[in-house]
Length: 456
Image (cartoon, rainbow, N blue to C red):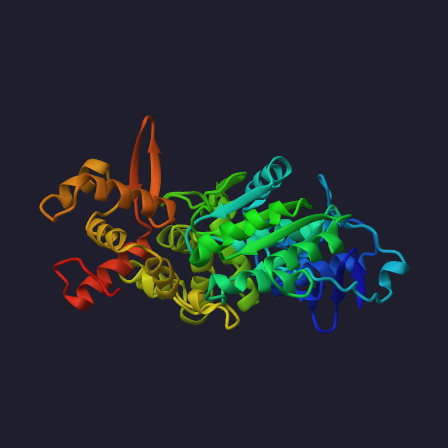
């Protein structure tokens, strides 16, 4: 075993661990890492890497950059030990005798997911800056957009830099707001009890610490989590709170950041544009890990770009598409996405139930809507592509909605990340994710429900 900063490299097992979490590296990326390790502090030029890792294949240099990027992500805060030497190649620094000795990780209440984040550098910087200026930052966005991955990656970086003591509280499986305080207490390693008891124990235990508390997946318990945050601030501790939710908490001190999808490119984009597109990069990374023989050529790059567009750059959907494409091929997956984008599944076995398929992900959000919001959402599923508020009003005419009901429902759908805003100067247009619209139309068709009502 070789230590690279806080990462552990196991050459025989061909895996990298960071904070005891296996990093998702493809076979090609590990080949590059092994070559850099064998060089023992010497520069390895790009031709050497290409000849060693792709001995019988002509590949774009940008393909190598994708794998270097995934290696740096796997190394976390030690990513700079892989240095780019302009005009020459790459260098792995920091390999001394001490680094080659096994080390025992320090126990921690913090558990990093270890996921590789593609195309999120700007968002991470934005969230980092927001946390520096605000006590409470809430990451909002539709299901599968990557809120949890971003929150945990940022918190892991803060934890590794020892800037704050970090705790994560996962609320996905919590069904009642009554259990929130106990879950917080257990996560922070104090004995559960009444609100007063927990407050006293927090003060006694952490009065000398700067804290960051990550509250993950809060939308189904939004009012309870809002109260919990108010309780935490009332302790007087030096703390920041990072929340992930599909809608804001709407309490004081809150700063919200809407997480965007990954980049997608147009139909006629060049190979260079496709290789630098974040949705394509994620697909390449995942496909390379699932199929070591996969090397993107111009034809497959165009198909990868099409997959990215069809799933609106949503990371969870891209992950699912890569798994299916590794077994069925890219063209079959594209045909499925054109006809039934909401039917995409094949998520990780360990993923929460709500993320086992896109339909389950959309269903989770749908169940959290008010009845009027559901009716308006089903109604606007008739509108394809981008549409205006006037178009919504026209479709709603004669269906019994008052103007106030319609406006309030539109606000609710936007706030809860089911209806996307497309700014156009002083005006806004709107659109649904393709998978969301497909799901809604499918439900209407299955139930043959001309009244636009749906199960409660």
